[in-house]
Length: 246
Image (cartoon, rainbow, N blue to C red; front, side, top):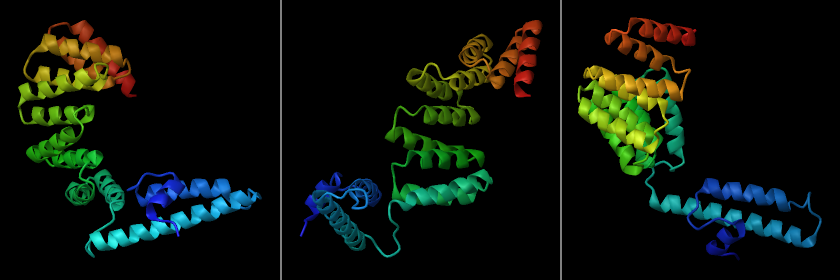
């Protein structure tokens, strides 16, 4: 009888692979060596070996789960199911309920960055900014190169009036991706809020040059130009924004 280590080898997966990965490998190999497609005796033997390896690993996973998990626990793969249910609630703006489902997803998969990000968005939508910041910082602990997390953290800090910290977050995002038009726009909004109009204009200029179809950036640029007394230029930018929004 095959041992567990040999089964992983037969299916071409590494020890500790998830049941989903094992199933995928089995299906690929089963299709390749199925007797209906291959009449060679060695292929028939190979198919039987693949089937036995899959059966053993599937049972091995069941035993592991039963011995390591309490009755009320869920399989890690269910984190995706919790996430999907949370997403459906998020779309309906049922943020309090969505948070519960995102919590379940991150409990099962603590490094599930998308769940942490969306949980943060829920808190932010509920104006619970400090709790949102905890979520965004969690993402950055897992992935310090997450442009989304730096941007969302910056927005949150800006909403709290902590503009210097917000600008630091946007700077971090721009170091990672200097061609991210949305970040330049967010940076400009933050600078506008602290009345650094010339610097804000530079940011909006950068945003519109990187993405000429970015209506919000054109609108923001127009408002800055009006603030600076450059009415004709400002009006043109605002008109351009309106056309792009149609």
